[in-house]
Structures are given as C-alpha cells and as structure tokens.
Length: 383
Image (cartoon, rainbow, N blue to C red; front, side):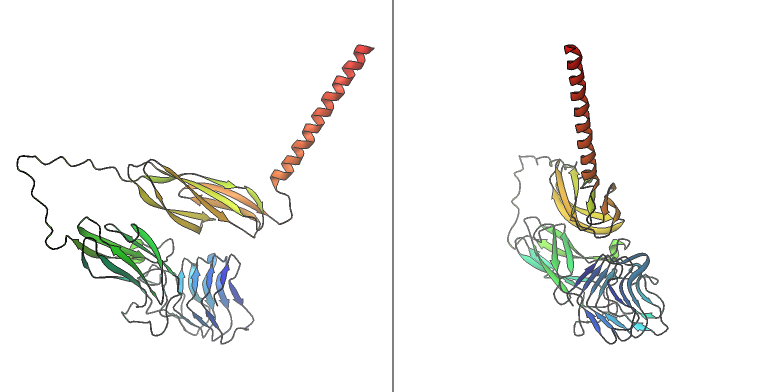
C-alpha cells in the first residue's frame, strides 16, 4: 500500500501463486516495460491504485488468470491492454476509470483496451457541476469535479473511490479560479475549485480534465459547464453624452503563439542512476501572454509534464531532471524537438573523461617533441 513502483519490467509480479486472496491497494504503478501487475494467483483484490503507462508492444496494465476483483482504479495509457484475462473465468473489473468517459476501447469506447472474459460495465466517469450557476461580479461559485458516479448514473461512493490525490485540471475562459488554469487533487473521488467573477459580465465556460492516455479524444476526458456572470442589481452603465462620438474600439491583439524553440541534454552520456538534465526553451512569438503545457517524452512515452505562463515576445526555459537505471540510448522529444542521451553501467568512465585523458597525452607528446627539437638546434649551433 502507498508504494510508487516505476520503470521495472514488471511492477508487481506473482508467477508462483504466492499472493492468494491478498489485496493490492493504494499504489502508484507506472512506466513498467511489461505489465504493471502480473498475477497467476487467484482471489486477488486490486483496488484504488493508479496503473498507468505500462507495457508497449506487449504487456499492459494488469494481467490476471482468474478470480480477481478490480475496482476503483485509474487504468489509462497502458499498451496494448489495460486488463488482460488469460483465463476462461470472468473477472470483475467494474467501476474503474479507463481514461475516457466512454469506457474501455472495447467498442465503442476510447479508453484502455480489455480482453475477453472481463466484465467492465459499468465504469467510472467524470462529471462537473457549479453551485450556484449564476453569480454577480465579485462573487464566487464552487466548481466540483466528480468521479464517484459510473456510466449508469449510480453513486459508487459508499463502496469506494479512486485514489486520493488524483490530479484534476480546472480551466475557465472568464473570471478566475486562481488563474485561468489550476490543478486540484481529489478527496473521496471529488475535487473542487472556486470561480471568482471579475468585472466583466458574460458566460464563463469552466472545464475539468481527468488523467488519460495520449490517444484519447479530448471530449472523453474533459467536461465543461457554464456559469452566468451578471452585474449586481441596481448597477447600470451611465449613458454616453450624445455630443461625444463613441471612441474606436482598441485593436485586438494577436493571440499567443508558443512553441518549443530548442532542447538540450546534459550530460549526453551518464552512468546509471546519475541525473540527466533536459532543458527546453519555450518561445512566445505572439502579442498576448498564454499558458503552454510542456510534455517531455522519453522513448515515445510521457515522462514528465509542466504547464507554464509565457509573456508576449518572451522565452521561458523549462528544466526537467530524469534518472535512468538501465543502460542504453534514450530518445528525448518535446513538441517536435528531439535529442538523446546514453546511460552506461555504473563504474564505467563516461566518454568525456576518456577523451579528456587522450587530449592530455597528446598535448604532453607535442611538448616533448618541441623541446627535443629546440635542444637539437641549440646543440648544432654550438658545434
């Protein structure tokens, strides 16, 4: 419970029937190259875990054999399976979040894929509500992201909930929720943010975004509601004097135009366990400030991400630090910009140290040749 298990071949492995009738609860199991959970035992309960971005060409989130009960987990971004049942007995995997409101990618869903003999219906969905739905300038509305209901509209909170601390992103196009974007964490399956109305009246569109895989359509992990912002009662706009013409509207500034200009990796070669720094330079060529989500991918998998605000005409450096334990070459990509670094086994010299030694030997050799030549010339002159 409460373990973070990442970057292994298997996150949790039981191929010897040793975990009979046990519970796997409250863990974060991500970025393992084969399966997040691989079990040949029976009777295991898998509940309230985050199981994400595991597998690749093979593997996936969970591989089970029979008798398991899987519920209230976040299962998303796993390839090729979210849950793979290799036995003939149906397992129960209801009330999980599959990374999409339309459920697993067993037709017609767009979330993680499930195999045969997996009962996944109903599944958890994300909903949004505002209270109240109409406010005056300067007042507030509570926005709630709710993941306690399933695809049949049933309230599941009495039976359990997704892991506490699940990050939900709130956005608004009018008013403020701290800024135009804020991230909140769930408690008992819900997260809340406060919308504060500014001086501008109108309709605020407020949206919430839940964890999801890279291939899921936005409409399946992002839901929105509206809040009407009005002027307080009795507040009116004074009429303009008839003799004075209306001033021309100010020109509309072009929107933000942001992209990653370049990325660098340092060092290019490191030992296993040594931190590697990835620096991305985000440039805003537009005339307005804006936010930008910088996503770092290593070997085509999401490693880290960060949302930044960039002023118009400015550049913003974004620094990521990664550590890898397996030797090999790692491809780095951020918004189309690419680079790479190499990890060697601990204890081996990096290429920069070896090259430094060769350069030093070469310099000493050149100095010896020059001194020898000068001594020979001097000897001939004296003779």
